[in-house]
Length: 120
Image (cartoon, rainbow, N blue to C red; front, side, top):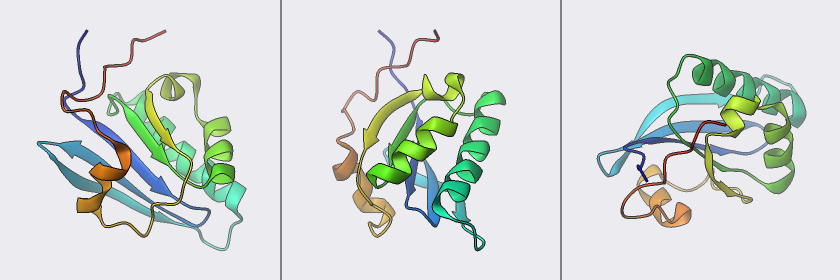
């Protein structure tokens, strides 16, 4: 079994999201997205489009998601099958108020890294 060297982490609620990459034992911010007077579902679609595009470009090796249950559900429904297959962890809670350096304890990142998703 091979393991991910790095994975993307999405910490979102219905109006904002942080996308980070975990590499070398630390989180590195990739993007901050905020809703522009759009509702929760529209924002989740915008976030899903961002992730789907990155997935199509081959930028995502693995994906860990954290969002309140409703937002997580809406986001999941708008992710492409290819990107959904890259999900290694889902946390059904709002972690947007958690500092980047405190996120590892909320995701229970395995010491060896996440097992690499096998393309389906």
